[in-house]
Image 1 (cartoon, rainbow, N blue to C red):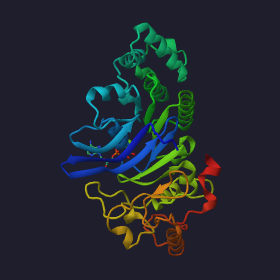
Image 2 (cartoon, rainbow, N blue to C red):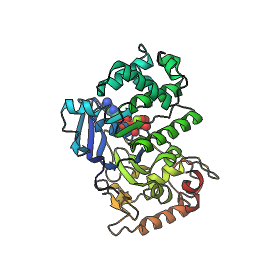
Image 3 (tube, helix red, strand yellow):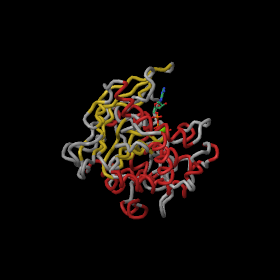
Image 4 (cartoon, rainbow, N blue to C red):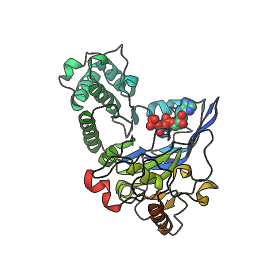
Length: 364
Ligand SMILES: Nc1ncnc2c1ncn2[C@@H]1O[C@H](COP(=O)(O)OP(=O)(O)OP(=O)(O)O)[C@@H](O)[C@H]1O
Ligand SMILES: [Mg+2]
């Protein structure tokens, strides 16, 4: 792993003061993104993925948000940076693609004008040069007849084309880091696959780092170099994509993998729901839904992230000790297989993940 990551997030905490109480959206989240690699943030709805992306450049509204920790980008701490610095970094060196292109495109201006403005915001170029660059970018992201489509309005584009325009806009200033928050969730599978392919190609050409948010593990298997598994504002596990898919250590990662359709396996939904973010449980945040939870899991703080074998593979589970010994948890899983009196719904199969059914071989 690179000793000098492009983005280094350390102990990031975000709370929101609300009428319901203090929402603990992120609670001590740490991860790195190196140049040229794709890191996927995964987790169920409400786990904190969007808040993590937006707080990197302080896009979350503050108040009600309170943000602490460190976000180092190319050696500079963004959480303590001034507004001027942040504005030049946002959209310039760190660009965003959000789930819904409608949120990023203004319906009253042509697509071309919006692209030209995005380019001129960060680059000192003439209107003509920006226009040429915009048409080039539209072509690059696969918009047919880009010179003609330049003068059309967003409503004249399909959903997939709008998402391509938003990607073109994000790439217009050649960012070092692209933050893509569910960029393909609303699209059909073929368009999604075209956009993922496009992102991978552009990334390789520019050595761009990508922080990619998705709850779709099929997409993770296609794009990720490394994976960060978030649950209720905490990192449960992180590691390279092969460790996460082939050797998942946290029961939550296991449950996520079991919840997706895979060849020959009936998907098993994860029973229960995320805890109330204003009153998260003691111990491991996943313990109320964990089929392996014991008293040790219900007390104290979230267990620290323990290093496992595998580059950067870490898990936050009491059953991994300092010697990286997973023996305890394997025993517990074996016991759970026989009792299967789990808290997971629809568990008509053993809850132990069968090593022969890894996604890697089939789908990656
Ligand atoms: N402005 C806000 N005010 C109060 N709470 C918020 C605000 N924004 C986010 N939250 C809370 O922070 C938590 C994390 O939200 P976030 O949007 O990051 O989830 P997510 O993982 O992106 O979910 P999804 O997959 O549905 O997009 C949730 O409990 C959410 O309700
Ligand atoms: Mg989100």
